[in-house]
Image (tube, rainbow, N blue to C red):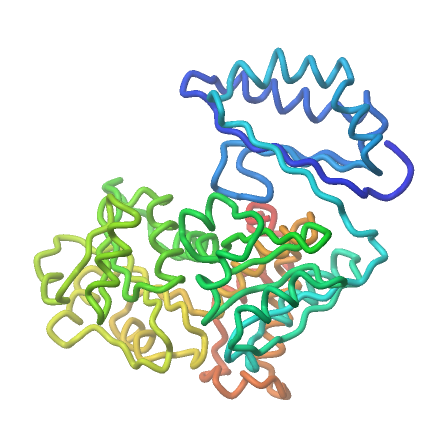
Length: 423
């Protein structure tokens, strides 16, 4: 390994051909992981299936760090590296699927500011996620709330010297996109951004980790489908988070995704943007014809008081879908209460927030998220008896914290494989 701290990151993403075999893929990964022993200019190298800055969008990724451009040039032209590309990578990649990005890393000792941009954000628990993530990964960065209704102010602050990026929430998830220098495939497809990363020199990349939070939490709580059939889902809402839910459910192989919104034109537009298997739903009464319902995702504001009308509420009792509520204030929205009373498994908004925040932590630190430590801090800050957190009073019933957060802490305490499996 080269002495010194990494200053340059080179990321390669790609998709495999349909003919690529497991043996070929494993041989490629083995060869890549052996390069640091042959090329001392490499500070670190991480590669794997669906691992990296754009999780879920590519079959594999490679993340290599160097002390500077000279180290990268040695690596790029080194015979062992060239042989891996020629003999092992190119033969199994789809033509035109290989992409590479490269950007300068701030010195590890440089303390950067990160923010949750939006309005209102004064109750946001995001600082309680990311300050633990930075600290546990040995970084001096700080994460703060930045309440603003101005998208221009968001962009200007995120581009400023000393800012590493931030989270983006209502009302900016869609409005900031036109002002960014790069978008990941997920953000571009979803059409909404919840994560900004400054690449240096004020350049900004937009990403979306909401879909990861939705997918992972739904999969963690959903019971096994014994018949093996593709799931059927309902999305309530048509904004940025609904678009992330649509993307997540597509990635999960849903057979049908029905989209309901109080303004039907917005549901129609979302369905048109994503195509199959999304379908706009003009009237919730049309749900009565369903023969199965596996997931219900509510992305409407917690203050909306949304519930399924009495005529359709019986679907929750009949099918027991896994229900996800994106809003976390109040913790038990009207929809959450309806789902719980119907005996459904529920992903609470704070659990989705935790999951997407862990994905952001990986992007910003380049290291695994300290899931158990983050979950423990959220439990203390939001549900502790002595907590003075601005959102704590909205977390009733505080004596019964979300089971997803408790499982993360218990997994570490008991040495469960859950922690390792979810990094």
